[in-house]
Image (cartoon, rainbow, N blue to C red; front, side, top):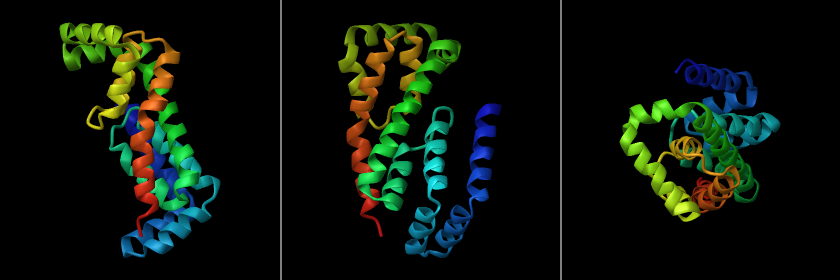
Length: 183
């Protein structure tokens, strides 16, 4: 919990340290969306770094991933934003996988109960790639939770990575496109 809160405060501090992001926040509060987009685009690498930090923070702080997809689409446009957020979500998923592989089993036992978790683990084994793809296509399944479970269940990293990338692409593309069309 302390790491998650520290990450949240670090992300806020990073955002406020970037003048263009600070200006964009002021513009957003005043309702000037055209200036928000311009301010964030002008932040250059700082804005891209912010997208990466927010995506990686999602590994431990769950929020609707579609917000970041739409925001990146709004600021950078569909073409540049899609590979950015898609890559960030794949990296975030792999980070969640490694947390699951090395530390999350006790947490998952408490969250779901040991017997239920073991049933889920068997379902993952039986379902293979199809099961993992289906988990990524269901937007109500927390993104990081899937990574924790797959890591704890010892899913092969290559299978987890490609199913995360392929399975999360449709929803990422949809919300990034939607964000790119916002005014």
